Length: 310
Image (cartoon, rainbow, N blue to C red):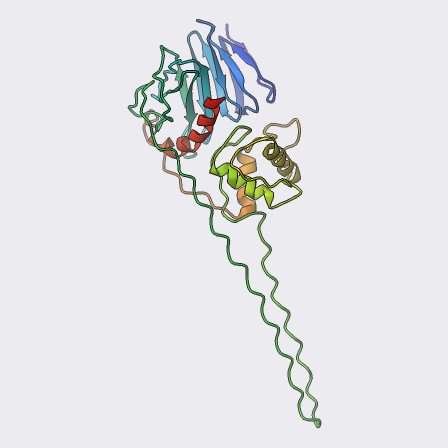
């Protein structure tokens, strides 16, 4: 009979099968391990992953994702992470990894991972995630190109004060006209307008979107006094994200998502910077074809590369 275990976020957990993990949306703030009962092999769900449910049974485990969720799974050595969606395993001598994701406009999907054999060592990043690709192949795809930040709008030029009227003849003194008040320049946003981050960011993330986040936070010295914008999500960036979440009532110590750039925090950044979300490609009618996930998977490639180096 299956046993049920609730995940309390912020605490690492090792899961033994057969068991299932349920939650509306689980956001992992730390790494936690899955252990298959068939051979006691161990697999890791990385910090920052979001999913709906994990189920372990025998020699496989199933991860269920709602739209806009994304999960990174890693294993030590060259283990081939075969799956029912034909998502490619990225393989090095020390670690293998796959990225699971569901587009915002898609529907809930279940990914069944059945580790089998070994994968081919390569430096390739994941392809579009399925639709005919074979597991364990060494094909590569170009990394995603980060969007260029929008050019800041030129602040409004204050209006020139009206010249006071000249006095009329002494017989009929004219009333002086009141000088017009200068126009008040528009208040600047917290950062350069148009900041949009389309993925979850946490300690260890790298890329241009991390640099954009750092530049945004640095515009408020009370949140990010160091102002370092190097594209690496380190301890100082983590502390700044926590201050930002506390200042705007998004999360505080001990709560889910504290210190992780999740959906609520990204939405607040978009609101404060005046950004607008890009159009999404409609989800395909065939769930097994994941070409609609191209954009989201490419956005995760840099995070995956960094995880493989650890």
